[in-house]
Amino acid sequence: MTEQQDGCIPVGVDLGTSTSKFCDGAKVVYFSSVAGDALTEQLETSWRRMNRSTDRRWLHNLALWDEARQTWRYIGAMTRSSQRQQWFTEGGVLQNFEDAYLAMQAGLFLLGVEREASLGRVAMGFGIPIKAGEEASERFLDKVRERLVTEDGKRIMKIRAKNVATGEVKEDSIELVFSLVQFQAYGAYMVLLFRKFGLKLYNTYVVDVGHGTWISLPVVENEADIAIAHSTPAGIHTITGNISTALFEKSAQKVKIQEQRIMEKIAAGQREVEVPGAGVFNFGAMLDAECEALAEDIMKKVRMDVAALGAKGVSLDYVAIVGGGAKLVFNGLKSRIASFFGWDGPMADERIVGNEALGVDPRYANAAGLMLLARDQLAIDEGKDVDTSLNIQAVASDRD
Image 1 (cartoon, helix red, strand yellow):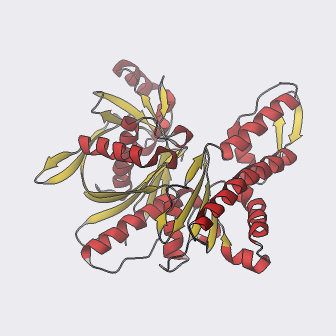
Image 2 (cartoon, helix red, strand yellow; image 1 turned 60 degrees about the vertical axis):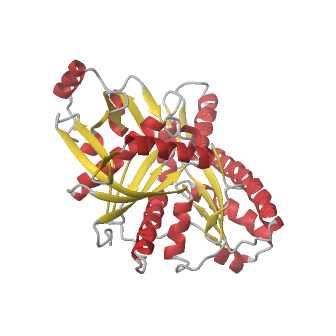
Image 3 (cartoon, helix red, strand yellow; image 1 turned 45 degrees about the horizontal axis):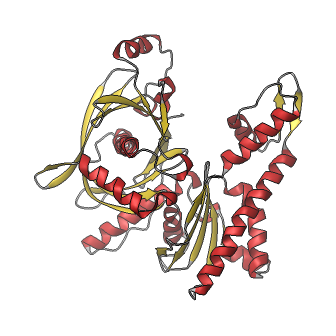
């Protein structure tokens, strides 16, 4: 179920460091967290004539009208043609509120495209980067409210979008019924709450290892511990970046292998890469060392946080190691956590859970969980039982 009886659709929004994800419970769309300046009208027309790509989807060729700047802006994959790009969540912080607002418009519009109908009315669960903090989240939501227009007492988001490949322009109006703000990793906790915990409250320490950051988020009695939560700018990108640099030096600086290539090798379970002019290099030992170093850095934070929680009289029921990069550090971190708590093998298996406990792809687990948060609030407002189902049937990205 993705829609309440009054036609309000719960949507989870996760503006991540690498990609921004939007989920309505059945569909997910995601695109690179980057906005860019559009080409001039003349250059854009020339680009369209010379464009040989067969991918004419809105998701791959999106531009939005930026009301604040009174100009078109490219979003996601289309920014490859921009002279100036802005990664709006770089370093785990919302770098530019205007661009982040464009991303929010883009995601809601694109979900409508995938559903083949405008969302119409939306209740939004919004994930804010932890390093941004509560103050920044309020300032961003103030920015969102400034952009909304009031029609018949309803707060409406106006969207004007263009498919640069086809030249088609569409307009959309979406009523924002309410928006709930939580830290990003809280979405993963919500998935665990609905899928694994059966709506029973367990004190859970979430470690979310992503592309550009890893997040530590203790959730105590269903509430995120804001004082302890933290986002650290290190993740898969750091590991692949360090390996790329090491290979460049080891190959006598022949050719620098791009981090994306190394990431593809890791994802495929391969540990060798060819450096043109220098031969084939095995980076397995480098990868192991990098993963161990990251696991130890995370464990240092875990130790401090457990001590801080203990001083408050709080004990943990579960530790969740999740996210797109979790598999790289899971075993090393699990063994450290088990040793720290003195848990034997069966106890560690029960209380330390990974991506498999989520039941959804870890890349969009936070967006799915934030959708569940919005759906839960809708059920409370309507005095109904919450729908705990989660059935992702389609995933679309600007890279497809």
